[in-house]
Image 1 (spheres, rainbow, N blue to C red):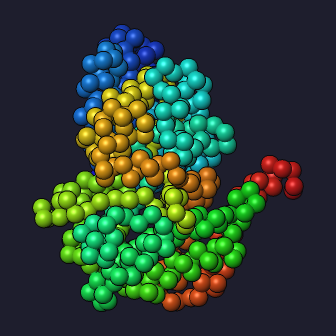
Image 2: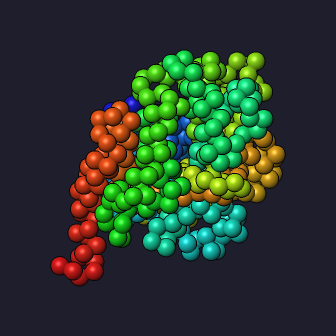
Image 3: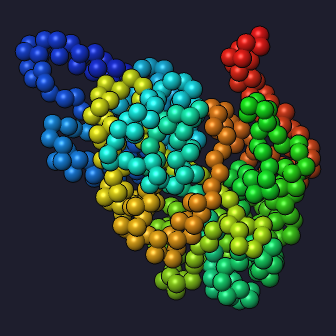
Length: 433
């Protein structure tokens, strides 16, 4: 796959040159001069496989337009996008993870969409979840259209919570902690599974505490503040109290261990709606549920992170108008619903939720609630590296390799190094030197 993919970029670049030559001498090439070149879409993972099933409907609805889809594994997608940008071999449309948009925007790889959105009769900005749409806006410009949405909520075993005295999911952290404490029976039973290398929950907890991840114009780390120390101390205590397994390798298969009752709560995303339905035994079919992130006070929904993927036009798309027609079509509620049924991904448009009845689905409803209580990660090209560093710091803290204060001081210094180039570029832009 890797070799074929690498060759594809080279061949793709030559193909464009051949297409231009053929257009100039259409008769000699044997191609009609008015024939439209295929719209090229790069899509990732399962989405790349499933979107292929929608293409025939688009082509039937738009005679003369054709679509060619390149499927790319998520593990290789980021590198392939950057390589293709350098080689000037990007397609017309790319699927972009929301945290990649600032980096690709900084490179100049994407085309702003605000003028197209303003003129579109098919796409309404107010039909999107505001927190999700915001992740696709960089420096006031909309750089992609949300395709599907992602955030984290609590998946939990309702039967185990009932045994712990909770007839319904708690709403606050204090109530959740009280129930979790009654669930713990070390070493065979814990309350919640938190992968110790994952950066998401430490960041969610930090944002819920009111912490700012970066300071200045996102120029420096902000991890030595008291608020940040309080947040990471709270996170650490989940492990110190035995609520979460701290071994790192204790959980081999999340779904099997959830079914076995090794833990009762798992923060996860919408992809697990389908996975839990398929993988849990029939006896548990009615015994698992979802709940929004707990708040710090009664009646409050705790914040979670905005995620998912969008569809972007590349800056030098060969067929930008045709490509935009395809993006508009994929963004329509009918296609959003069809894509949800193929993939399990949750639609980005509210109207698609209504038409598909998702708001009435008790397990999807937690996501509907959570999607109105989101925060975006910093919109800078360096975020992926910073997120990885946060994950390493959280792991050091949980494994007792460093105290909270020391680990966060080290993290601050590491993030400052990561952001060194950003500070230099901002200084030049301000005329500071």
